Image 1 (cartoon, rainbow, N blue to C red):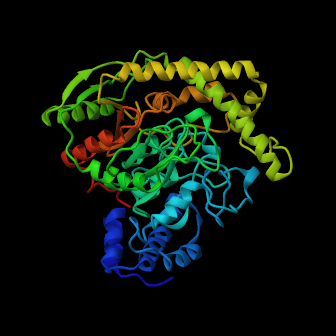
Image 2 (tube, rainbow, N blue to C red):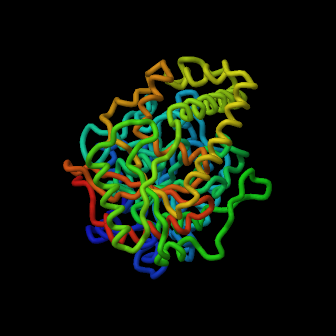
Image 3 (cartoon, rainbow, N blue to C red):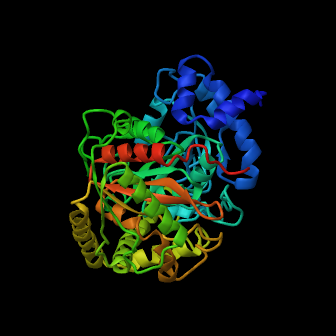
Length: 478
């Protein structure tokens, strides 16, 4: 490993992704030096956090030598999530024993765009098995720790990415979200996490995940990094199932424009009747007060949603899709999946999926589409709708236990994320911003939801809040 100066390490850990790329473009630092800074930081911090499960340093050094220095993220070190996305030559296991020896033999479409943007892969971030948890504690790779406080979850399923960003191992990393898996870890770790509109990022070579319920983007430390990343990876391919409207300008430019006076709805009342932590409630209300001072029109509005029933329907649908995925994987692995290949909860999911009739499944899909229409219609009067990201502070490690065999009992614990999955179902863009901290110094996220296809307003208001309620100087005491 090459020696890295203290000043370069300080610059690396204090800069966001676009800041580092600008240094590369000005010739003040090389991609190779940034890679070595990332490696040094990962090697120092990862033993205590377990955020990076595959160190791909030789690949990174080779890639750094070929980076286009005019690319938007030229030379910026980056982590890919160990779930779904394929980077040729990198492990591709879904954190699952069944796939533990798999290495990607090609790039997925989003990875092709990531490479073109100049991001340099230094490793892969930890994730729960097949993404089925809002913590990150897979048996295959072990537990990721939250850098802010010992003993609490970093969130999931993008918990490895969030812990790595919060601790400054990398400034930006891939994240994906099927029921809150971008926004939950962003909240737990005090960073930015945008779930984009349905169809905003192509899922190629796959056609669809969960009927539009799964989304791919990133977590980052700043709104502008997320906006620039969206510019880099967004766009449907001809024939994609969902094609949201595209703005005339870049999201980076749009995020920097002060929004007009907006009609903002908000709630601190969960649609499942659960309690809200007082510090979470106070953070949402302080955000609302800041928006009033900025001149926006505010209205309280509680969502008329039978959240528990909707969550059950969504879960049943995803169980069928998960079972079908494992049937497909059998053609790659060469044998059927067994109870020894997956964690007990995953086996319960597969078994429920296999036991669900085609008639029940298509009825669930139709019901979810009707619910989607209801959610969109209910929130349509508002330019932005604001909720807690999580109703409670990050839970202790072990709370979301995938050794559980009762799927319904396990899923009941997802009630903390009740404000997340409705926007996977409805396709609306939603971002978690680190707008508060608990009395004990634990990050608290606030969620901003926009109209379909209108990430521009979500990002612009997020930038305004970033200036008004700045989190940029907060960092865990590692």
